[in-house]
Structures are given as C-alpha cells and as structure tokens.
Image (cartoon, rainbow, N blue to C red):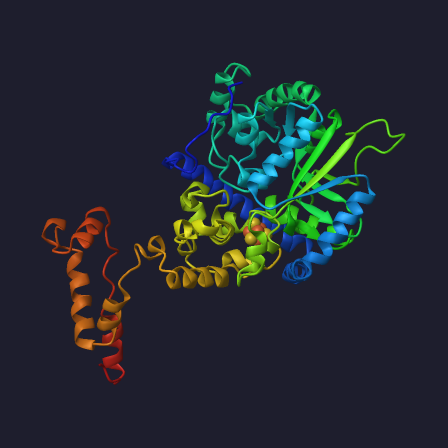
Length: 467
Ligand code: SF4
C-alpha cells in the first residue's frame, strides 16, 4: 500500500459520472429515511424536537456535563486529555503512542480526525496509520478525500473501487460488491492483528456513566480494540449527552436519519480499559476532548449547530449538495451542516468560507429532516448577515445587484420594458447582447418558453386596475 501523500485537498473536479453517483446515493438514502421514520413512529417530529431539546440543554450546561464526564471516565480507569485545537489534538495522540512505544494504529472513521488532518500528521511523524471503515480505507488507498459525513465515498462507483484495489495489489479487477468487501476484510484482518493502537471517534459520550457510544455497520471499531494495547478516543466536546437512557432516543434517530436503518448493526458501549480479570481489550484507554473553536461557536448566535450528531440527513436531502457533491464546499463538512459549521470553525479564515451559507435555496428541507431539529436556514441567514457586516469579499461575489431590481420593480413602465426585453432574449443571438455577463449566460442557457403577459390580460378582463 502506498504511503498517504499530502494532497491539495478540496481542489478535486467532479466529473458528471461522479455527480450522478452523489445524486442517486443521496436521494435513495433520503427516501429510505422518510419511509422508515413514517413506518415506525406516528410523530417523528416530536422525537426530533425532544432530541434537539436534550442536546441544547447539554450545550447550555456544557461546563457541568464535561466535568461530570471527565470524573466518570477517570473513575472508570480511562485517562482524559483536553486539546484546544487540532494541532494539540494530533500531538496528544502522537505523544500517547510514543509514551507507550506504539507505532501502528488502526483507525475507525472520525470526522474530527478529518477536521484535524490526523492521518497526514501521524504519517508524517512515522506512524503507520490505517483506516478500517471500508469507505475511508478506499479514500486512503486512493489518496482521495471523503465527500459525505456518513458515506465517505458516495462520489465513487464500484468500477473505480475495483480499479483502486487492483492497483493497490488487493486482487485482479473485480467489481462485484461481495468480492470487494471480502478482499477488504482479508486485508484488514491481518492489519488489525499487527496494530498496537486502536483509534476511534465517539458518537456520544454519556456524562452520568462515562460511557463512550460507538456505532458502525462494519464492526470495524470493535476490531480496532480487539488486539490493540492502547485505545485512543478523539471526540469534540459537543458530543456529550447527559444520561444513558438518552442513548435509546439518539441511536434510533441516528440510524434512521443517517442510513434509513432501524438500528446501526454494531452498537458499542465502552466503559473503560480492560478491567483486572478481563481476558481481552486494550490495557489503556485515553479520551481526548477537542475544542477546536467549538467554544467560540457556543458563544455565537449559531450555537445550535453544535447539536449536530453527524447523521448526514441534511446532505442527502439538500438539492445543492445532491448536484454539487461535498467537494464543492471546500471543507471537511459539506452540505447544509458544512455551510454553517465550516465557516464557523474556520476562525480567522471565516471570510474564505463566508460564501458557503449562500449555497442554499433556503427551502428548509435540511431543518425538516434534522434529527436534532437544528434551524439550519436561520443559521445560514445569520451567517450571511455576518459575512455582509464583516464585508467578506467572497460572500459578496456573485451577489446580484438588488438595487437595479428594486428600481425596475418600483417603476411600472421600466418593469414592463424589461419584461419585453426578457421576451426578446429568447430570440436574440448571443453576439448582439450588449451586457457581457448576460451574453455569457445566454450563450450556454436556453430560457424556458415565454409564458408572461397572461396576468395583465386576466387583470384587465376582470376590470382591475393595471399599473
Ligand atoms: S445538521 Fe442535523 S441533519 Fe445535518 S448532519 Fe447534523 S444532525 Fe444530521
């Protein structure tokens, strides 16, 4: 397997074939989500509201719940670390490994690891780092980048995966899904046995018990802990929930929202490292709580985004994401959640991503599917407002001149004339259009057939006053 090389992240061009994979994958998952929720619950919106309230309550008292979680984890025999930013988080992971003479890590999928660019950091520091989630493994082998929170290779088809496996020596070209998964399984089993460190994220950390809850469909997180000596958990501080009993609600919503399943296949509850007398499991467990600007987000008027449980439902339903893919968002988090979270987590780099909140039609579908009821459209508007107040150049680029529109709309004669011009545009050859932007636009787009004029006629016929 080749060493992971630094890549120019997010600069990937998405060909039409890949866009099709994203569109179809997202649409199918979204439809499954709707069907399974409607089938299982008379009022799914009530569940979403309750889950949102629990998460918001936790965020409102995060200091208290973080301390409680830390106390419980320590009592369970885990070691707890706090990292202010991505660099500290990565360095903490590396120093834990070095202190324990470790050099080979098997890693379960973690969006936070993507956020901190952990793989690259570990690889550059001589650590043998292997992704074990099938999608993430393919991303790593291909030196690619995930484009979806739950389905990292939603942009790839099985032909590309089979080619990747052939190139990396996992077997001659075969694009049968069964063959692909069997080959990945054989490849990974051996590597699990050779590793000394298992690295996972956490879907939830329960404050009252110090339990880490992890869900996977492949069982790879379990394998990451089966033969390794050290288990390291990296988790954002917002992933805490108050009580064990809350897990029932969140597991049910997460599985249905993320993949349309009633329950994810493997649900693990990790209470600490191997206890005396237990035959298996890591000898040490380290939990790294990572801030990385989350406290800044908590103090902002967009704090609700920290309720996010990374289900990807808003990505699947979003018409913009479906057409453009996660790569269009130029950050680790694509889709509506990314349009809010990425600029906020960018800190001083806010201006560079301040155009992302504009990648939305504000149709509200993201809010309707969100299992924790995040008012994403409202947050997008707040971020647009912030971008404007801060004069973020990128966010302003492409903004249509509303002054011109306002002038036309308030002058009936000018409005009528512009409508007539719009009608004429259907017939004019592009070369004779005087405005360059309009000419460029018209040369590649066909206007829909003209259907105007009926309203005024209708108004006249019923004796109304036309202005
Ligand atoms: S914002 Fe809501 S719908 Fe989107 S990933 Fe987060 S929890 Fe899921």
